[in-house]
Length: 124
Image (cartoon, rainbow, N blue to C red; front, side, top):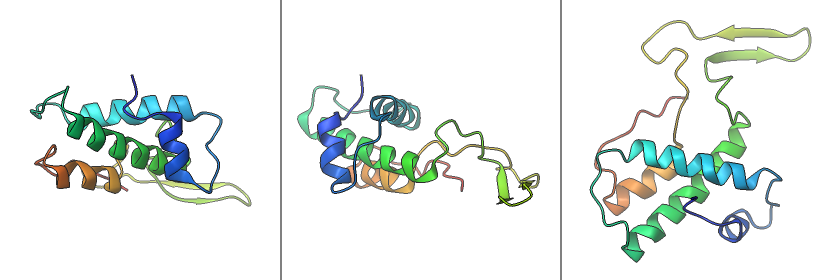
């Protein structure tokens, strides 16, 4: 179950429209938040926690929309040209080919609330 609703996303994105795949993006955003919160201790029935997760979820959806790479398939692309098609893939370093799982704004909401006391790996 997503941490935010279509209505929450509509409010956050206004005046921009909600995308057709909003339900899927909300699910994916909530899954990403769950992943970075593994091991975190918080009350699941606490309304303040629900509000933090809602805020982080809509920011995560916005990040997914801005990246336009919902699946992470282009996470290891360092550069790309459209005319004549040219791609350069990252091949050096520990983060080569690692898809970012959470945007910096969503991580900031979680950190400032105290839910996330570590800095998650945000690549890209």
